[in-house]
Image (tube, rainbow, N blue to C red; front, side):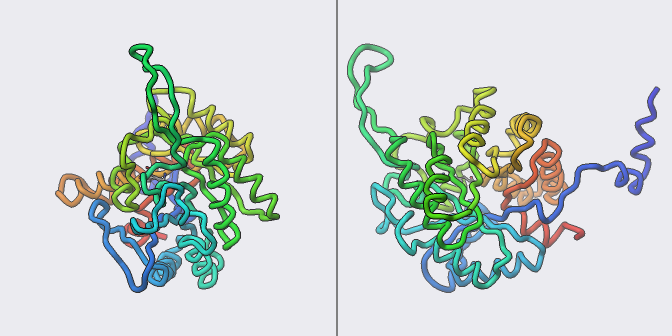
Amino acid sequence: MKRFRTFRKDQVTRDRYADVTINVRDFIYPYFVVEGEGIVEPIPTMPGINRYSIDTLVKDVHEIKALGIDKVLLFGVVSDDVKDERGTAAYAEDNLISRTVRAIKQALPDTVVFTDVCLCEYTSHGHCGLLKERREPAVSGGVIQKIIDVDNDTTLPLLAEMAYQHAKAGADFVAPSAMMDGQVEAIKHRLSEAGLSTKVLAYSAKYASAFYGPFRDAADSAPSFGDRKTYQMDFRTHDQGLEEIEADIEEGADWTMVKPAMPYLDMIARAAERFHQVPLVAYQVSGEYAMVKAAAQAGFLDEQRVVYESLIAIKRAGAQYIITYYAKEYQQRWASI
Ligand code: PBG
């Protein structure tokens, strides 16, 4: 008989054998930015998370900095009247995110700033790229159908331009999440052409997930028709996530990502085992956050213990960094730094 219980006999002993830990440096904290001043607008689907205008956001970045969090991921939220079919506001000179990056870098230059690169928050139709009609025979019979879908190759230069604008403003990492084939290469090429050494965090294995629901309310980015299944990954595939990651690394991704996190721990583990050359990030997405929050607020579970366990599980699976809406609260309430 092996005496496993000797490893668990008291807290000190358990702590000695615990080889997976959470460090404040593991965290990347997401922010939603809006135009205006003095705005701190709570997001109903994500209790505890707000939309900020640039000025209040910078204040909050000071707060998280004091807690030890030094990495932020920025999402822009714009009003309907500036949205158009091409998502122009995403890559315009002096766009919302570029101004936010500059403000953060001016106030707190050591903050590591990541920017989300995707058109869905800026297009009138809410899709992640340019729409194009194509014609093809219906699966069920030979009739030619018109299908409106996101066009891969004409979207690439727009994503590259958006990344370039963010990089020019001082972003440390641009993070393409549109799931267009070739997006990492297109961005890398544009950045190197401009002589910028900004790094790319690729949302490589990003699944078409229902767990993004609360985010789409937060960012007002739900598609106005259809879904994202023609570009985000089908969660019923087993190896394709690894192929996506491999392709992104070949295209020059500096860091890579699996998203969502909790329901995809298998993919995190497989990616961590296979790819040692680049850091692996896991995104604990809005639905994962909202689920735990709602259950905790209803008194159904112990929030502190559930959050700690889920973060440890993501680290144990092999993620080096975790994007989580819980980062600030964890450091504020639960971490013993
Ligand atoms: C943009 C994007 C999304 C998320 C991150 N970047 C939404 C989506 O793909 O619909 C989701 C993040 C979250 O749910 O927390 N494409």
